[in-house]
Every structure is written in structure tokens, then in C-alpha cells.
Length: 163
Image 1: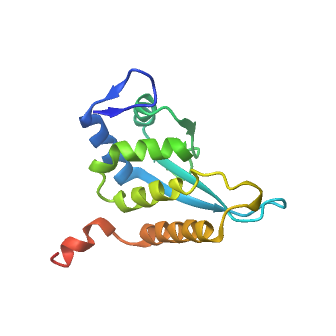
Image 2 (image 1 turned 60 degrees about the vertical axis):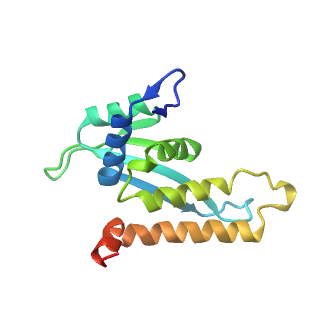
């Protein structure tokens, strides 16, 4: 069974599989590039996991299993229903993705990139800043994650080719 970020709570495998399905269908795994501020020397990145849905109970369910940020998204307009969002950042994103990884299909490659990306932050580089090779790796992982988002059904590409 998976472990939740709350103490003494274990998440059932069926719930982990269900959450993976929600992430595959409604979720967004994103490495976001942020422009450096005046004092920062290199690019800044944010790792995020979001699920938007028009059913508030789904967002509340996700938040019960994996406490994160929730908020009301866009207001109802142009005959569209109001959206709600469940949103995790950084380490919390990695903890969630590691638990649902065996059940992901569509977003599996993005999840693996996100986990690898987060591992590049496990070290303090001091006054010399982030080494060039680490910045290059982060950029490559960011670009690969963006490429996967533009691809149509990347998880099923192999089966279509007969492999």
C-alpha cells in the first residue's frame, strides 16, 4: 500500500490506481520555467501537479488522500461550469507521483521526468551557483516534458508501431 503525507495513514492500492487514472485523464504534470529576477543568475523552475474538474467532490477526494492546495478555478461563463483545482508543488508532487507511478499510463513519462527533475535540487551549490551541467539537465528535462505534452497519446505510440 502507498503512504500518504498524513501520519499513520495508508492509501489503498485501488485509491492509488484511481488517482493515477484521474491524473492521466484530468491532470497536468508540469515543469514550469520562470524568468529569473534581477538578483538570480540562472533560470528558475517550478514543479507542479494539477487536476482541474467541475466536480468539487473529486477535488475534495484528492485532497483527503493527498493534502495539497485547493481552490475554486474559473467562474462559470459562456455556459461552462465552474472549475475547481487540486494543486501540488515541488516535493509534494514527487511524493504523489512516486506512489501512483505504477498505475500511470498516459502521464507516466512526464512523471518520470518530473521525479528526475526534482532530484537535481537535492544539493546545495553555495555561492558558486548551480553548475552548468545541472542547469543543462534541468533545461533538457523541461523541454522533454513540454514535448511530451504536445504529443498525442505518447503512451500508446509503441503499441501502434507493433512493438
